[in-house]
Length: 326
Ligand code: PBG
Image (cartoon, rainbow, N blue to C red; front, side):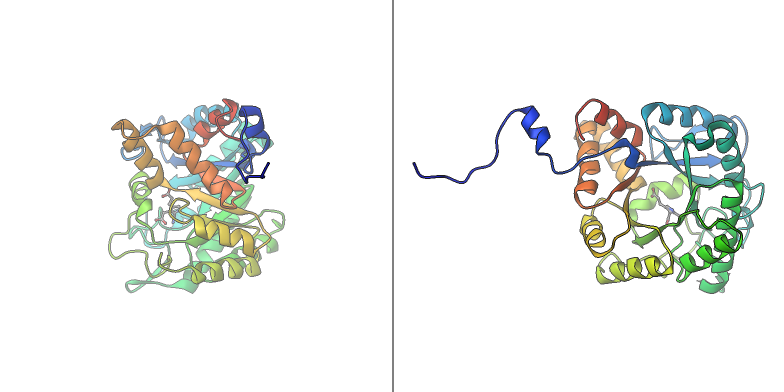
């Protein structure tokens, strides 16, 4: 008999035995919006199923996550007031700082608290830094970012995640954290962050759309691949412990290349627009939500990510429990 090359076939047990990608709940991070005020749980119009919570209402969601087996959250703050220099970002009683203190009090080390470090939710003009004329002043912004990251660590952040894309921010933040004794607080840097239309719903959620211009002077042109790899290398040199690729969908080549290039964990952020598209498509009856969520998650891990940030974290956890993925 002549041997004929063929694909491995078999039952469910064999298929699971030879699976090349394993997904675990411990790799999931859930992004959550915390809004200044009390008694708030309001649905984000463009992100059905996602809410803005005030500090006194967030426990409900955090408990739900913990129960689902999702132990890491990333906080985004929505302050009551904004100013030109984004001083709410580093205020000792700022919204994120309050949320961190409360979450630490309620959950101790049972939840891992990560903070997004950026100015855009806190500046009246909506840009990610301090303006000089109509341009963001890179170096002035570094000081504020470092101060913000420090205030997060002081309030109880386990990890900080700068998303502003200023040059030199990882070094500035690392330096400031170290000087104040937070040497073990890791930095997850948004290294490969494109100027993407996929962030649209987030800007509605956080009220952080720029009031003029766009973010193209500091976020990357999505035609570029080498530029992204350069950002990865620079951020690691400056002290990043984990690097992130964002968005995840449409950028899986960058996840793969980053994972092959460096030896730090690579995180993929499935952003607001990805969530909204799935929700809208499923609501219209055009796609099956669970299957799409599963394929997007596995796709990110198959591409080389070992950490996945997603608004679907609870759903991914459920799909793992149901054996649909993993
Ligand atoms: C802050 C920040 C943004 C996102 C994460 N951090 C918005 C932006 O850069 O415009 C987007 C996340 C999402 O779309 O889910 N700079």
